[in-house]
Length: 284
Image 1 (cartoon, rainbow, N blue to C red):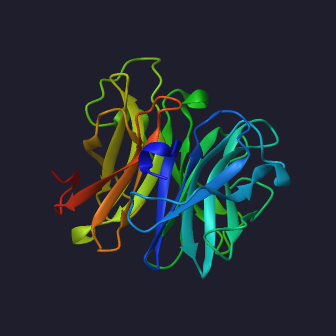
Image 2: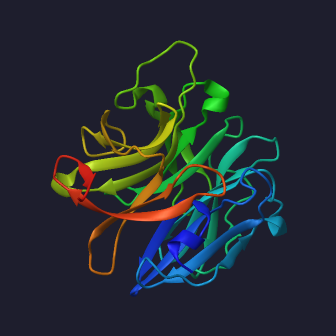
């Protein structure tokens, strides 16, 4: 399959042993019970295998409205997917799934979300600090609080549950170039952290600006997630977002995101990134 034939949202790439593993949200029937997640395997970021199911959400009672944004991280020798599902109370939250292999089968680590039970939350990503302590960075949704936020919570070492309270990082209205308006909604989604040159810690995230989906970026002023987050000029402003960063087989720094943001038209796209030491930008 070519990239143009793959209809997914929220693409996420794991690079391992010369292979790429591409995951994402099934875009067909997005927002409905889509049944789980797939992986596409390839070696060149252009040609992919047919999708193979790695998680069947119906099997675990999670096949409700949200089967969204699977991120895969290798942690302590195992593979973990962090993804958004509907909780028993009808609110969305981020759950952790676990497998011995990047191609599954993944099973839930716990029967509860890692995000607060009474919050509408989505799009959790794993961050491990310099001491080896794991954290979940996620979004508190605008559907509940109007001005969506990005937050973090420390996790227990086995990633089974939180190990402390939630901490605010920034709000959707803080995006670069946004003009704040009273009672307006501000979207936050797709956080992803990347450690760049000069030990700078970047956070990719997405929002809606001027009626278009933007790939935004922020940087911590102290190089850790508890710093003050400075919003930089967005990386991509042409109706694409929910991106993440990885190294390709030649060690080039790469960005993938879905574009456009229109249902049934979403495709994974890839760009080489430049780390200037001050920010990240698409190479031209």
